[in-house]
Amino acid sequence: MSEPWLLSEDESISDCVVPSDDPWEFPVCAECGQAAYRVLHVAVSGIVKRKVPLCGRHFIIACLRVPELNKFTRAGKSG
Figure 1 (spheres, one colour):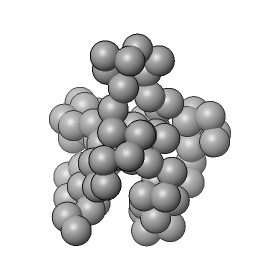
Figure 2: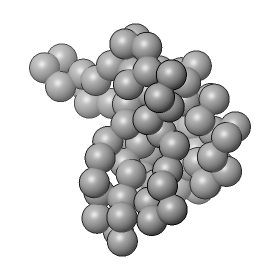
Figure 3: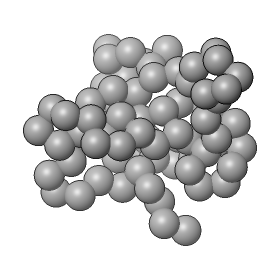
């Protein structure tokens, strides 16, 4: 598994959002293809370079391995 949420040295997580309600834009998990629970915005120098949708299970795994995610609340907002 590639773990697309892993960050390189120059990357940071700028935001963690709830997926869009628009069915045409509803993302699926980058790892398993299930419906996304959260979408991580990965940035370099404050500019979002990629978005990583994750299902609930893979979001929890990412939170356990990337301490930077702990600054976001369950609603996806910085807390």
